[in-house]
Image 1: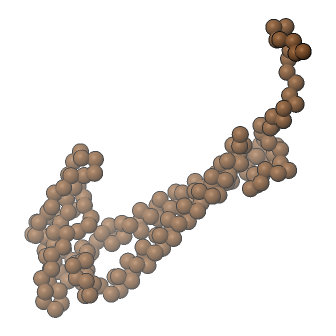
Image 2 (image 1 turned 90 degrees about the vertical axis):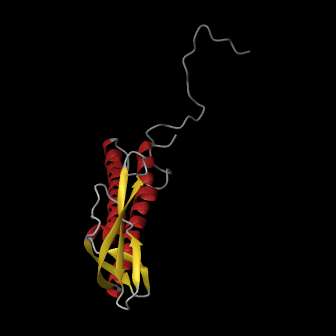
Image 3 (image 1 turned 180 degrees about the vertical axis):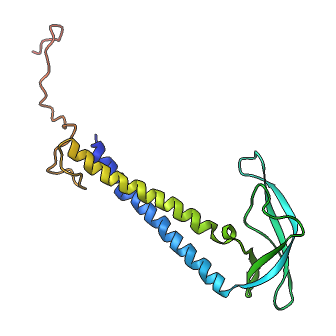
Amino acid sequence: MIDPVVFLSRLGKFAFIPLGLLLLLGTAWAVSSTTTWLAHAVEVEGRVIEMVRMRDSDNTGYLFAPVVRFQTVEGATVEFESGLRTNPPAYKKGQTVSVLYDPDEPRYAKIRGFFSLWFMPLILGFIGSIFLFVGTAMVVMSGRAAQVFGETAPSDSLAGRPLLHPINTGHVKRRVSPHDPVPH
């Protein structure tokens, strides 16, 4: 059986901390991607022409997404459905909104708003920070637990370190009962 102090330390070091770092790396990529897209995007005025109603993932209610129509700088008319779905609806039919679009790909436009632009980096950063915090806490607390139990701090190797639960080597003396069979 593995020592719980070592288990928690390893779980923090080899699962939670790396996962948190990968999510934070994804956050950095998402921020970089969004800022690069924003630097290239053109801003125009658009109008919400419809509010699409759809069932939420739990099938307990509805979410609403605006369909927006706008004209590009070149004069082409484009319609798109926002990827941000909310309840209650964030927009009303006929409402004027600020639209950002890439001149090379106008059909992938977005409504200019904090959540429509920064939702993914926000979620990745939040979850990554939690994993990193919990993993770091596991490593630190397992080191403190080892000190409380009078052991050395957990390492990646069990060699040369006292265990909380000694390994049964087969040389365990046991109490003999009068009802035990007598060996011949």
